[in-house]
Image (tube, rainbow, N blue to C red; front, top):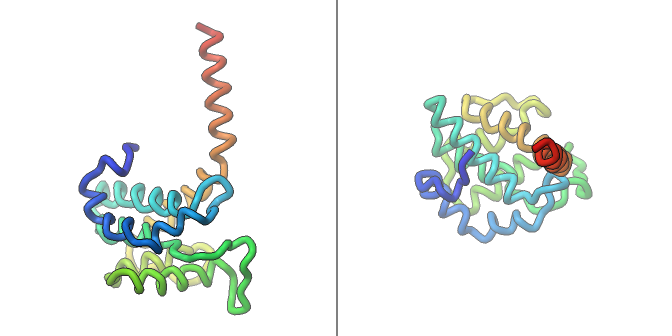
Length: 164
């Protein structure tokens, strides 16, 4: 997949959000052990955007909702809530934070609030919400296993060099 920075259409859609200090602050939080929350959110946003275009879905809502889906400012491994699990609480916190920095369409709201629907009972109302949830799950797994993946790539490269 190409670098999101080279996709001018995507950058035009999310540039106002990426300039916002609250979004930039996500870079200070570890997300899935080997990534930060800003990188994770951009990856979810851009991969969802590319797929939405391919499937003729609302790519703008997917890009923006995907970028804002984890707009919360606490370490989810340490912070606990009396009202429910992190899977239940953080989409609502992200939604409230996103509302403070931009106007949200009903679809963007649904994308943010329902991106944990496999872990919660709140069903999405749009295919775009399902797409962001699936990409979010994929990204979480990929980010968690990044060190092992990189190690396997290096081993393969060494074996290929030795064989030549």
